[in-house]
Length: 207
View (tube, rainbow, N blue to C red):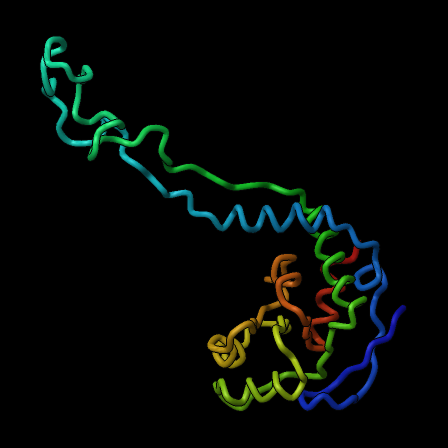
């Protein structure tokens, strides 16, 4: 098993922890990470875009002019897609964009993403992360003290103080273990996790 340093919120080493190679040292599979990210982004789409066809536009009940003899192109309705104010041809309609990926693939992709961050030395493990109260300034001080630029911070459970303290800081996100996903791990440059959360991640992702 690989070993990693455990630091406090000031960046000072306070211990070491053994990491499971099946989670942090597995084979990286970029194609699986791609499939899962595509699934996540597709499932976020609402699919509510809707345009009016020629049958939905008001008017058009009377033929604009007689068929022959005017010298103009024949026309049957003012709601034609060719006319200003007419309907839209082949426009978007509400649809479902949902994509499904097997659970084993999602877990394997997440292990690959975590391994990638670990191999890049972009994983920081904190002994604990506690703030006395909701404070953006205090949380930003932690981010700065750890020399982080675009971190994903993963905690063991619900922590309203941390979540509210971090939400106004650009490129910083606090996530609970149960919400851990491939897209956020890849999108953020550093992976910051508490010691308790490491144990829960390993329990959840063991093959």
